[in-house]
Length: 274
Image 1: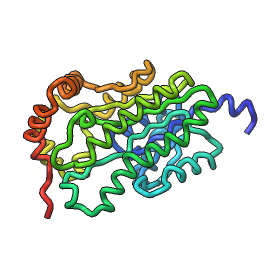
Image 2 (image 1 turned 180 degrees about the vertical axis):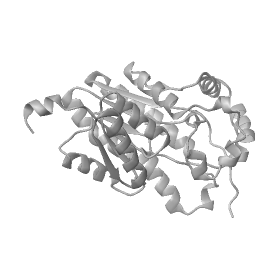
Image 3 (image 1 turned 180 degrees about the horizontal axis):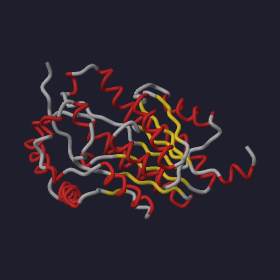
Image 4 (image 1 turned 135 degrees about the vertical axis):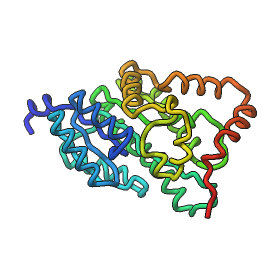
């Protein structure tokens, strides 16, 4: 590649969990911002369809990378694949995630380990891999999909989920403190209910359907809030006024009261084990 081609090349965004929901919305929004994209997820057919749509609608490059982020070393394999393309990551979207609604010991440890690998270890590994290059080039963007649950104390079911999301928010705050003056813009977006396939994947969709529709955001609303916050270098953003209010109350009220209320309200999302 010539120096002129390198200088004129579009920035590259790497999006994990890109096959549906918030990840798909991030991919489309960044393509609309004239970014090439690398789409990472396990479902190759969904990724191929999305890549074709993005290429058709936005005339940017869309690369498909089928990868299981629950595997040890997946972050290195993702970045090696990007390097093999002759590219570097300008925008990292750590979005891949799910939850396990059963009690902690009711599922095999391997399933809990896979959860931590996907939501924590490989997400942090991707950030670790891209930050040196971003610093060297004088800038870059990292956005993590956290959750309103990250503000909450732990309750029964989804045992590791609040902790993982809380870690991701604290991680983004730490990265901002370390790298803001080196040109990095780091944001954790923490939505509440979002209209995606998340609940169907963990088996709580029937219960989730009972929640008032006014409490749900679309993936596009979440992504718009995240990108606007990142543009302004805001580190934590909670989209939706009702979610922002809930986050404020969880931080302000006595934890014992918050935990009691959440245990009452969340019991229906804790699935009994067979």
